[in-house]
Image 1 (cartoon, rainbow, N blue to C red):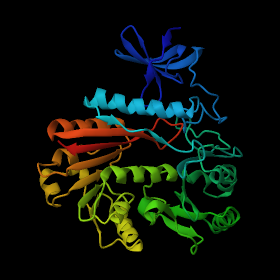
Image 2 (cartoon, one colour):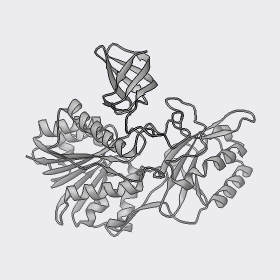
Image 3 (cartoon, helix red, strand yellow):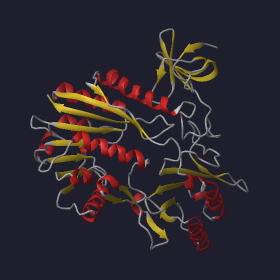
Length: 432
């Protein structure tokens, strides 16, 4: 079997080595290690390989804390020291910026990280019934598989959510529609924890009784979703605390529904918002755009500065939630929300929104190519770009720098998802 020296990690946390001019991606290998590996897929320019044996371990290699690591696909980096994970993600960001976009920031921001365990407040859990008297599995998918991992606890979930995994197995197994309930979405809010059950058949009266008893016993709120996300509704208890999260530094509380997008890591999101606002430096009297604004995670903190904010989002439901949150937090007079498909943005449609002094962009993984291409000569003098995909950030940064003449002032990584390969980052651009 071949032996290689691992140079770095790729965006999926695979070790990278070289063999006769080809790049080899080795699952489970860490930078600096000498490893023996076995290839399972060979292409003309690269190979995919499994780690067979570590001949010389990295100083960053640690014993995974979770007994399910390597089987469960929820985590990819538990075998790497947490601080080393943060540094590796910073390198993934910098490498993507250069190799994809051929751009480099003038300065690198210190990476940001929070608690490595119990941080996850949002999760989608798969559900699978194993057959007659086989029981039920509830958890994340196995590593690169459609099967559900047989996990009994999860160290990255909030502890009280991890404690629900086994009771949820028993609950689903007791339902008449156990084989017609494919997923459970979990949302932890400031005042309550909500479970959204995706049901493909109507519940029977006995099922409803079991669900109510479970909610009472475990102090959770149950939502049901019979079809698409718009059909989700609160099932039990009907009165009670609302689902929300807070941004204490800005004296904000934002309500959301279990089907709405919110960040999974509340603590790091607070730091992300704080740093973004500091870099944006919103001032009273300025007019600022928040593109892909969601339900107002950045829009409302910007408005707290006294600036006038226009939040634009493709989802009508999220825009509705944003308006409600602005009203509830006393900011309706400073915030304007609008619905638009920013993936089809043009220079004319962007100009129709009026002049913006500054802009914050927080797109999904696809990035914001059409939006950044549409920025004209009257574009904002400063752009803060929050990204969940270093590759599309690099692509869009190249447009801002090479086409529109922006300076690439700074960039840095956020470890929003410890122990996973996911890289969240922030970048700042200014008119030259």
